[in-house]
Image (tube, rainbow, N blue to C red; front, side, top):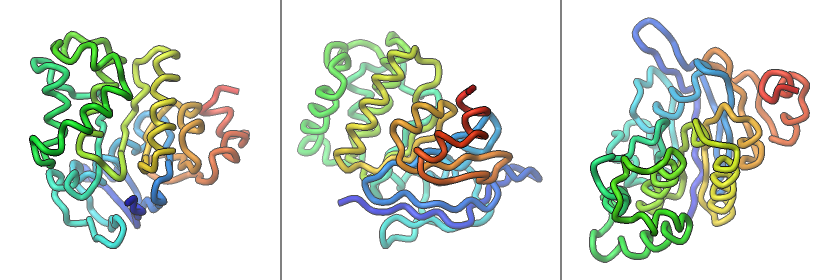
Amino acid sequence: MTEELRVEGLSVHYGGVRAVKDVSFRVPAGQAVGIIGANGAGKTSTLRALMGLAPRSSGRIGLGDKDMTGVRARDMVRHGLGYVPEGRHVFPGLSVEKNLLLGAYTQNWRRNTREPLAEVFELFPVLAEMRGRLAGALSGGQQQMLAIGRALMSRPRLMLLDEPSMGLSPKLVSDIARVLVRLRDEGIGLLLVEQNAKLTFEVAGECLVMENGEVAMSGRSEQLRHDPRVRRVYLGL
């Protein structure tokens, strides 16, 4: 069962610098929300703060009826959050299959890994073909698929994805978009942080535009897609 994510008044400081300033939003159960913005807008800091990987100076985080504000980063996955970090961060010296199995560390190792592993291989057939190959030998696009697959191994109800299109060819970006749409349609909630506004609008029904650590605009993706400011700054139109 999916659950709504609620973020209220989130702020992040690094020393004397406030990287995220009083950000609030919701990700309804089983839906996709995007966050777009230029480099340094506070997108990644927002995502890392939600996972407990960046210092939260204020704010509350809720998932369903649970208060997640004080939950440690290592326990977030146990509460149903999957995380695909910027830069993929696969384990290059381990095989594709072992990378995936590490994503299932919250599951009963023998009983509950076979089915999600088969599902990941069905979603990304190339990973099945390369299951014994070292992750470090994969292309950038294949490593991105591996990072998404690893997050899916824990059977998350909500996935947080940080720049999944970074460094990928247009075709691979389209492939990743199709996978994200499928996951959304299967009821997994998505919080998608991206510079690629076109990808975000394709996947997410709602979107936030961040500038200088704050939410500058928010609304339905279809509305923002046609907003002159968004089209000029983020779509180059």
